[in-house]
Length: 265
Ligand code: COA
Image 1: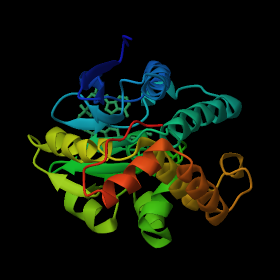
Image 2 (image 1 turned 135 degrees about the horizontal axis):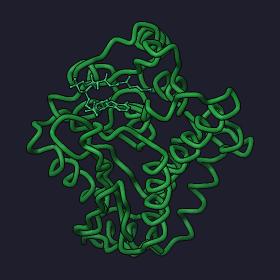
Image 3 (image 1 turned 180 degrees about the vertical axis):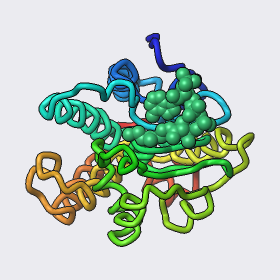
């Protein structure tokens, strides 16, 4: 599949999706959202894809935000529709049953920080900068940032970052738990791929169930939890794993002291 605003590369089951508008610091316009929407469907529907990375083109930015040039003259209803569209695409990323990891290679501001936070976890390069500077524009985050930043860094820090529009560097992002690992710019993609290669050696259905259950712990929208608590969800998912071939293979391999060969069944 080809996209006008994304570069997509496949290597060893890892699909690297690069947002490719470097002259606009990869700002998220309508086209990027349409392309991302399709690309995430492709990740989940193409059996050759096991895991995915989202990153940005160029040395400077992951994504510098929603495309501010599309904000002019929107009515309240149109602005709400814009936020809903962004939230829906980001929910699709968050709820993907295949792991999607953000490799943040520079500015992750506004919608860029929100995109990174919708991914299952994040790595970043030393030059990365994170922030929700929407109050500078008389706005607030609209693509889930008020919720996900609070989940990831806690209420007090989330409030402060959004109210001050203060940008944080890679080390502070790591201290706050916003990113898991900080790398050099040159090694960011390889380090991300190394982690995904480990994940790809595990039982895919079980990995997908981890995503589902962890999401119930943090997603506040009941439409996505079907009114179930995370603990109920975990009981069901645990049971679901027990009837997979991979579970039989994993437990047998352990007892037989050999490496498990998972098939995703
Ligand atoms: N929307 C649309 N265009 C954007 C953009 C955004 N969020 N962020 C950057 N761009 C564009 C700039 O307009 C500029 O385009 P031009 O060359 O056609 O004038 C180009 O990307 C390069 O950005 P520039 O501002 O010249 O780079 P810089 O290195 O001086 O500054 C930033 C980098 C990230 C600090 C600055 O671009 C910025 O503050 N961006 C907006 C961040 C923001 O508020 N995001 C939240 C949006 S809700």
